[in-house]
Structure formats: structure tokens, C-alpha cells
Amino acid sequence: MPTFKFDDLDIYYNVFPLVHNSITKNITKNNSKKNETEYLFLLHGNSVSSKMFKSEIHLFQKYYNVVVFDYPGLGQSQRVSHFRDDYWNYNSLCLEELIKHLNITGIIDIVGTSGGALTGLNYITRNSDKVRKFIADSFMGYGVNLEESQIIVSRRTRAKSQLMSSAFWKSMNGEDWEQVVDQDIDLMVRCGTKSIKTIQGDFKSVVCEVLCVAAISDELIPHTDIKVKEVADDIPNSSLKIYDFGKHPFMITEKQEFKKLALEFFDLE
Image (cartoon, rainbow, N blue to C red; front, side):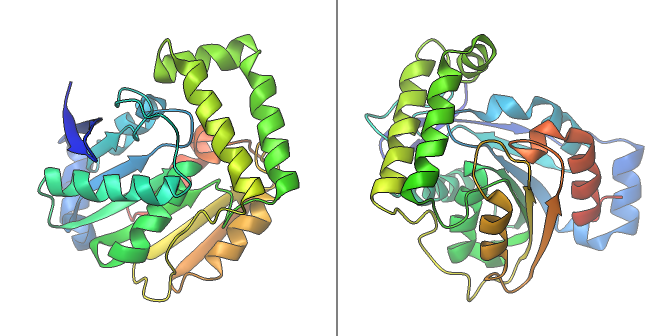
């Protein structure tokens, strides 16, 4: 199992190489921008792992070397005692270390969903010149108030007792899935009680192109569309796509629509 060191922790990652076929040849011939972007990073959300990207990896391997990793304390990465208040910025520093570990010096593309979107947004506040395009999907904006965090905590706590949800979390994290989910619930409590800001930097100097995505019907995060728009409005080179259908996260619950959106945004069609 491939790992790298971050903050004295063993962090799981994997690189799925580009699958060369007729699609790849056509893109190489017709799209010079694609030639400059060999790697796509897929950033998963809170309480889950990179295992959630099985079908997305298969899709994007037609166009990129696809890189995934599990954040500290999640999936196949080493466990931690708690998730830090600067959780998403901390994960973005882990992303930086992985890029160094892989010796990637060229421009990358990113897709981040839910907490992965926040990880990517923190990353581009420092490294936007290293990113060509970034899709930020289904995230909770700059943070949540006490009432909103209580709603998220209630929904997560209730889901723990549901067979399908518990089986899903176990498939993502293993036998200790409940401990992992409890740590995430504790983070959500602190987000509301301490008004934790999810994004540490600012977007004034961001130069990469960012597409923010949200669904009005997102059942996990209250007012997702409003929160996502607030962030999108602060990013200089951004666009916004709000859907009136889909659940959380949009990328996973509406795979075909997201596929169409992503292929167009990344100049792959």
C-alpha cells in the first residue's frame, strides 16, 4: 500500500495512470491546454475516503493520471486523536506534501467534493498558479452557525444508526468507522460553537479558473447554494452552477450530470 509521510503520519495515496486510447489521442491532438495538465487530483469529503471515487477514477483515467489520497485519520491513512480546528487547511498542507512527494512540477487540475472542496479552496489560496482548473462541489462555504451545525450533527448522528449509512462508512474507513464519524461530528459541533472559518486564506491573488457547484436540495448542509455562492463571488476567475435537483454531494449523487459538467469545464469534450 503506497504511503507518504505528513506530520509524522502515514498517509495513503494512489496514482492511477492515464489509459491511452483513441480518446486520449484526439485530445492530445486537438487541445494544447490538456497537454499541460497531466494530473487530476480527486479530493474526498469529511468522514469518507478516496474509495468513494471508484467510478470517477475510471472516467478520468481516459484523460489524466488520477491521484487520490486519504486525509489524516480517514480511510487507509493513520488515525489521529481528533480533527483539528483548521481541519481543511491542514488537509491542504497534506496535499502540498503529496505533490512534493510525487515530484509533480507541472500544472494540475482538481476536483474536490464537500470537505474536499474546502481542502482544495485552502490549497489555491497559496498555490493557484500551480492549478489550471478546479471544481469545488457541495461545500459549506466559509462555515456554519450554531443552528446549522446542530442540523448537520443531528443528521450525521441519526445516520449512524441506519444500516445503509453505517455499512457505507465501514466500507470507507474500516472497522473503526464509528470512531471516525464521531470525530467528524465533534468537529461539526466545534464549527458551530466556535465559529470556525473553513477557509484560512483569501482569494485575492487566485489566478486559476474555479467552478463552484451546489444543489438547492442538498440534504446535509443547510443553505448550501447560498454558502457556495458567497465563496464563488470572492474568487476572481470563478463561475457558479446551482442545480434544483441532486443530493449531497452532487458529484456522487448525480454522476451523469456531473460527468457532463466536468468534461466540458476541463475542455475534455
